[in-house]
Image 1 (cartoon, rainbow, N blue to C red):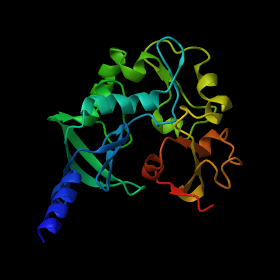
Image 2 (cartoon, rainbow, N blue to C red):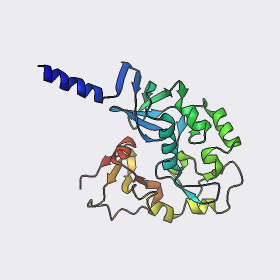
Image 3 (cartoon, rainbow, N blue to C red):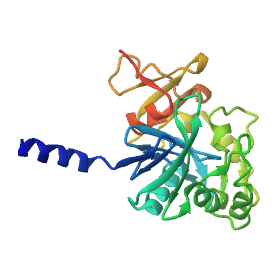
Image 4 (cartoon, rainbow, N blue to C red):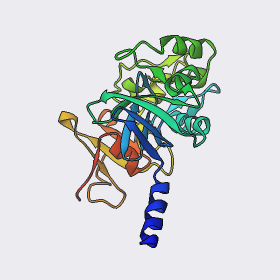
Length: 243
């Protein structure tokens, strides 16, 4: 019996999540991307902001292509530094993620991201962080140091997609960021999972070696996504291909 109690205690110690009540969670989360985290099995989408996707490419201050989505997540990981988060959950989105307003060390995570230029105020749903976005643009922080496409535009980009920037945007920025060549290759050698966004909000992801993996043309950027992990793909609302 003592050994059973010990095993249970060890297992409990491995779970770094504590539900204070039905709408509040305390946890050291797994950071999927710069606006999505897992607190245990609870998938949380940060309220009021939109951060670059993991496969998103931007242009940096030196005019070079930049893996800004990956960089934004890494900056958040450094800021969080494996400290516990306190999250108030306010509902769910269409992907069944919990919408959450989170703090770490008493600081609003969403505000930190927007103010430092690693996310934008998601005006369609909230104007809480607009002033922080204005600050980031004025100081050329993060994404605003170069040129980029708003995350909500990146997910549905077309030839009419607008390129943003705090200073003059390179004349070739749109053609570069919307180039089929950009969509065709993964943003990082470790980000090789292919996502296929179908009609009616469905999404299927394909692993290397899968039946349809090599057939999936990633140049169809408006309906394709690269993912760096299965956790990220599932967090985006995708399911794994059965073949």
